[in-house]
Structures are given as C-alpha cells and as structure tokens.
Length: 439
Image (cartoon, rainbow, N blue to C red):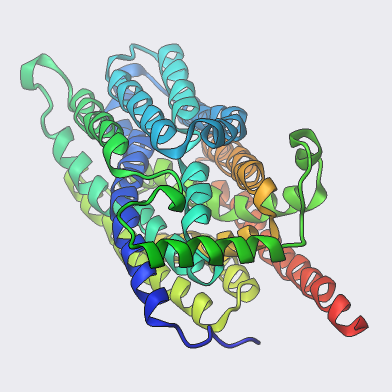
C-alpha cells in the first residue's frame, strides 16, 4: 500500500487552500439545493400522494422518471459544458431546474407529475458530472478524494437540513389557500434560480483565467495538472459511442449504481417508511435527518483516509458491503430504533463511497475522455440505481406490503457492486504494474 503524499511545499499548500476556499463552498451550497429539490418529493408525498390518489407503484414510477431523464441528458450536458464553459452552463442548469422544481407545486395528477419529474431530471442532469469534470480542471489527483467527499457532503447535509425544513413547510398547509406540499416545492425551488444567476459572477472556467490566484500559484497549478494529464495511460480518447460500449465504463457504472440506488431509494421512500411508525410530518423530518447528519461527518473522514493512504479499492468496496449489511437487517427487526440504525448504515455507506470511487475513476480516465466518461458512469448508474431500483421498491412494496422485501434487490446489487470493485481494482493494479516489471 502506498503511503501518502510526499512533503508539500508552501506554494502548493497556499495554492490549494485558495482554490478550495474559492470554489468549494459555493459549489457545496449549489449541490445542497440540487439534492433538496431532487429529493423533496419524498417528504411532499406525505400529503401529495393522498391528494392526487397516487399508489406506491405510481409514486415510485413518477420518482424514477427523474433518473431516466438524467440518463438521457447527462452525457450531452457534460459535453455542452466543455463547449460553453462551466460558468455559463452550470448557471443554465440551475435556473432551469429551479423553475421546474417550483412548478411541480401545480401538478394535478399522476400524468402531470410524470412530466414534471422527467423535466426536472433533464434539467438537473449535467450538474453533478459537470462539477466533477470542473473539479478535474482545478484539483491535482492527490486532493480529489477528500475534495470530492467535502463537495458531496452536500448530499447528506441537504437531507439533514431539508427533511426538517420540508416538515416545517408542510405545516403551512392551508396558508393562502394552498396545501403544505405546494409551498414546499415553491419555496425550495427559488434558491436554485438565485444561485444559478450567482454562478455567472462566482465561477471561473479554467486556472488560466484565475486572476484571483497569484502568478506563481497559477503557474504551479497549470504545470501540475498538465504533468498529471500527460502521465495517464488508462482509458484513452475515444468516440462517445465507443466509450458507451467500453466494458470498463459499464462495470464502473454498475459499481456506482449500488451507492446511487441506496441514496436515491432512501431519499424517496424513507419518509413513507418512517410514517408507518405513526410519526407526524415534523417528527418524520427530524428522525429522517439523524442518519444524514451522521453520514455527513463520516463521509469526509473516509475521504481523508482514502487520500492519506492512497488506497481507493477497499475504501470503495467496504462502503458497498456496509449498505448491504444494513439492508439485510430489515429482515430480522422492524422497530423504530433498529430502522434508524439501518438507515444510518445504508447512508453512511452510500455517501462515504463517493469520494474514493470518483477519485478512482478520474484517475483511470484520460483528460480527453473525462467529460464523457464521468458523465457516462454517472448517467448509467443513475438509470440502474435510481430509475430501476426506486421503481422496483414501489412495485414490490405494493405486491407484498413489506418494505424489507422491497429492499432486498438493492442489497443484492450492493453486494455484487462491492465484489466487482475488488475484482476490477485488482486487475487495474496488475495492468499498471506490468510495464514496471518488464523494464
């Protein structure tokens, strides 16, 4: 196992500190709003499903349409960001999804909900892979796992904040003649529009344009990133169609789909699960926040551990196996405390996996392939994890009445994904070692 990074110069330390403080806090806030707008349908369902007459199967299908649209639009969106620049394209994404999210307040039945969830997925599709690509423009590889983990803490943090907030907004029921879930969508959609406009003033497309860096800092960063790019020899440049047919891309997507499915399924269905214990909407919001708060802290510590040791494979696999273990618990216990423990295990695994995994993937992709490759992995994983598994949960729950049985396909997927990351990671290690041994 390699140890950590060599001694760091003062120039490197000051440069990376300035880069991190310039771009990460703003992007974290943006992503936090994205996750709130994507997942608030789970809390809205506490009122909305009854108002619109939605069964679990119909609600599951409506929720899953977000991910089908995400799959279709994610890669083209990332390629568009390369063409138009991160500042303009991320602004476009945020304004669009904010307006659509707020517009969901006016759906009148299953069909209009289907349309709005599909449009929301299409609008937001390029944001996460776009930010991942954007971070590769700014972060040397030694910093990516911890920085990605810090950025992605927005996911559990959004639910930690969003669940109680959504519960509070549901209590506005009847204000100005509208239901609480109407206000939830409207109020939580507005910040995305405002932040989208702010992107035009806050973000800088490339280090070459960073006037907020000193000349020596800018030169060091450009040189370091260029050196790393020249050393990459893994999955090289290829056409988009060839990339989507590359077996390693599909394997990586299947691996990531385990964590993606766990996060998406819990976001959509956990409020309904907690409702079975007779909790009020506000109580559900507060209890649902607990696992996300724990996951917010541990995912940062796990990302730092991965960067400190330079180890990615086991840091990724162990989190997937933790998800599977938590889900299997549901077969043996159904008390509220045990359910909170289960949710905590699943969400700790789902979010702690992301930093090491994306550092692993970005290290395997060449700079010319990164835009389409990162988006392709994310898009296919969201289709498998979010589109299929969120839908499957609703269908199985409707058929059996058991949330435990509805979670078993997800447990199987995470077990398979954990095994696969160990296998492919070992294979990549052997391939990288062969040229050295031949010399």
